[in-house]
Length: 341
Image (cartoon, rainbow, N blue to C red; front, side):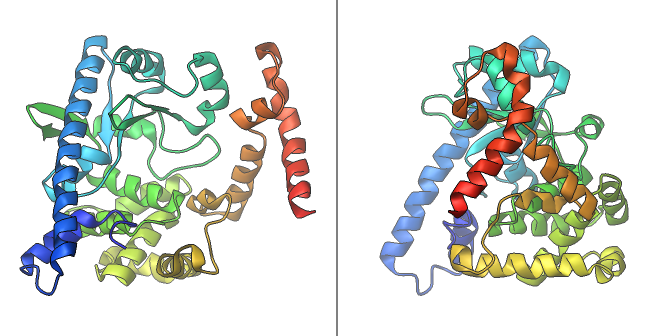
């Protein structure tokens, strides 16, 4: 279960504090081998982040790290204290081309080397994934969610509140504090909280950063149409891990039947995994929207957004790519009908 939910470092730390009591030798050996490998992987990711930071600095690209190395240091004080597989970075939208140039110059590649194609059919996700042999994937973001969705943290708001995190000999700008609370709540809800590790991260933030202004955090999320994400994250932290909901959020939480119902469904899914009755469904990410109208609008926007699948189904020359906005709904409808019969 710890492996499934990316919680092996926390499990190892807890078992070590208990002197590995009643842990079979083979189980302990397996976990200690994982810890050795994970420590090496974490160091490699930290060095990878540093090389990219240097490349961005050379080209004058502003950026911030989030999740991964910097989140482990901010929350746990140790870059190997949590599991992660990617290097996540956000840049201003206007700096995206320069950022892509920088990572490609370091040998990273995207599945679609044609940048025009990439922007046309992957750009709606507002992130591009770049891979490198023997290195972690770099997720280059210019926003925190797809074009069709709102998010509790506005990308434009992060640049004035970054925290410098020491990673090796470098200081890396990272998302922290109230912005981090909004980010973790939004990301977990968008991904339907399918990993207990995400709940643990949020709970640690609540417990260890007691000076956060949770009224202001919730108000900011509400202004983005995503206030329930904060209430939901707090509810899961309390019901699963016993971390008390910040007192100032008790009243709005008590008024939200939707949040309590969502929390119960998500806890059931965590307990049962894919065997449960409430398996993750398509468009699960629309739960970030507080209002039903916004959830409907997000679904419609996504239905009208061309993807690489549309191109593969009907390749057209680039001059005709705008037609995919018209043909996509019909293709999706045909696919849905075919799946039923």
